[in-house]
Amino acid sequence: SQTIHQWPATLVQPVGSPLSLECTVEGTSNPNLYWYRQAAGRGLQLLFYSVGIGQISSEVPQNLSASRPQDRQFILSSKKLLLSDSGFYLCAWSPGGFYEQYFGPGTRLTVT
Amino acid sequence: GDSVTQMEGPVTLSEEACLTINCTYTATGYPSLFWYVQYPGEGLQLLLKATKADDKGSNKGFEATYRKETTSFHLEKGSVQVSDSAVYFCALSDLQGAQKLVFGQGTRLTINP
Image (cartoon, rainbow over all chains, first blue to last red; front, side, top):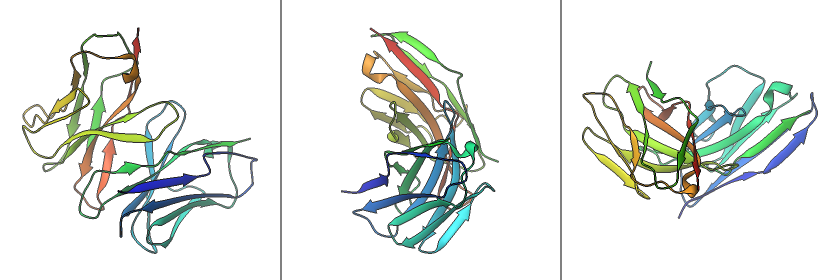
């Protein structure tokens, strides 16, 4: 069966510090991968998605970036965090050719 | 573009009450429709789905029917439990490409004992 992991689970970072969140999927190959952000009490905002290694599409201009160095690894980064980057970050995957997405447990980021 | 509209929350019910969370959509073509559930502090879980008109998705006592004529996919449950307290998201497949989902804003449901 397929499993999706995210780490860390929680993170507290000062403004201006760098960020690296990691997501990995097990038990499947060539998945589509997605990064979402969920602000407190709000809905989901799609940040990035990837349909293959090295292929990244950005949905919203911001100071975040994403990379996919391996087939089942998706990384969300920032060089300098802003207060507005605080939120709950969710990674998701979907099998190629299908729309349903499966979500990881999330990373709660607090920028202070 | 495609969009999903859910009923405003929060919704508060007593245990064993009937539940309906309304979801309507705007889309070109014939998208697949989904309901996701998010328990506090967790990621989203796929609750049910329907891929064509008149399909009924069901899981854990929840049901939703894909109604093309009313562009709706309302979530229903006959008797809710305290453990159903969560945020529920309606979503549709974005047929414009890249296999993305378009999510509604979410509806927070609280069930009191």
